Amino acid sequence: MKRKIILLALAAFCLAGSAQAKIIRGFGADLGFIAALGELGQNLDAGFSGCLIVKGPRIFVPIELSLGASWQKKKETDNTTMMLLPVFLSAVIDLKRSASGEGVLPQVRIGFGGVFENVATSYRGRFSNFDPSLLLGVGARKRIHRRLSLALDLSYVFVYQTHLPGAEFNGHFVKLGFGLDYLF
Image (tube, helix red, strand yellow):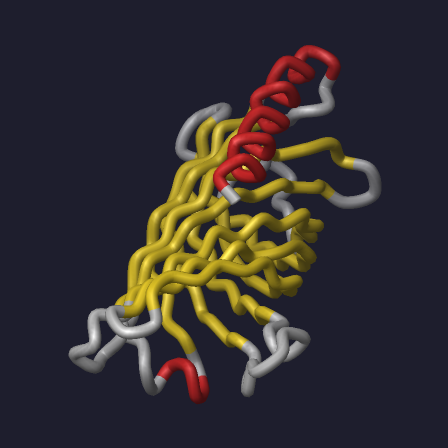
């Protein structure tokens, strides 16, 4: 699993060299909170999350590659922790744009990807797996400088886990993040 994460990070850095070719439009980062919903939400406390975003080319809509991490702890006393490492390729749709480019820019995000999941328990040990996932989100950007924007994002993440033998339910998560975007 560590090898896959290192390879993904290397790929992101290689893409950074393509900024002069306008393949990369910018970078972003956010920090925030994550909470599980449904059956899983009854067992996990809200946790922390973070994300690094590579803003890719604008084909029909802007494309983004996001690499994130989140950490949550189980409510009970058996010392269970869960770490999620999501990787998404997303399309971002701007809902409106003012003529001057100033003001708040609302956005909708739709993405597909996968989540590396690492769960550590005091009685079962540690296990990891990779699950396909879906991202749906809304957000807003406010330009504070010519190339710098403040960002607010609210995302729903669906993690398809029932494909695994013994899995009883899928993962449903809500993430709220605050961040900065830098465009070239």
